[in-house]
Image (tube, rainbow, N blue to C red; front, side, top):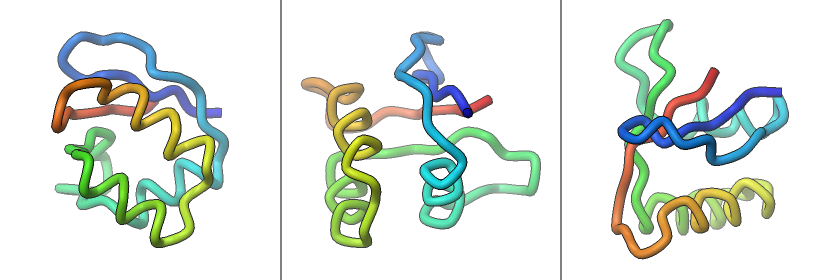
Length: 76
């Protein structure tokens, strides 16, 4: 299991399984192979859903955004 955090605040967003993590890695841009942080926004989460993202992952990311339009997340 990997843990997702709000990169700026350090708040734990939740735990994701290996398949959910791989989905994020495949869908989001990494600067290099050691990159573990990503920028997400509402439109990106909609695209995740269209591309078959796990419903639990989509729900977690939407809840994390709350009223915000975007945020940076990191995993470990």
